[in-house]
Image (cartoon, rainbow over all chains, first blue to last red; front, side, top):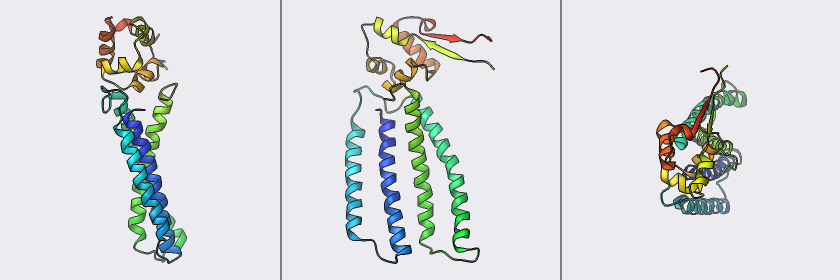
Length: 146
Length: 73
């Protein structure tokens, strides 16, 4: 596994953790009207620390001492993944703009704290699309998918 | 519609050069092992500079490493 693949796996793990915790906090505050439970917050913080530590350890390990940070194929894969992420932002943006109308109605209102959460969600989903696009391209690019 | 295919002899040349591993070749030409795997499998067409570096590593002309197969031209 080269550095680009490791970075993508690290992104996937990190983004899934962020999305899960954001969803939990949103439901706790927005729906249940309770503060987030301390036990869950501790579990998530521990998971973040664990993923980051393991990720950095594996990220720093090279396949060989001469391994480049990235090569021409890595750059091509990253370029296509950026395109996929950029394209994915538009349906997400459309959904974020239209869905609230169907949930709360045209004259309804939503809590202000949801607006930054929606924006952050879109950013993280775009990052997830980018990382998955990188991994798919590597998986398809070689017979052993190494 | 034209069907382009770039065949290569990288795997054979590696074995003829002291059973060079993919990692050793990758280190010599400055790419990752995954790129060598993709080139050998015919899934990735390298840039001209990389193709020349591969040929130079094996000490052969580029035509002996890559063969362009297209009947239209």
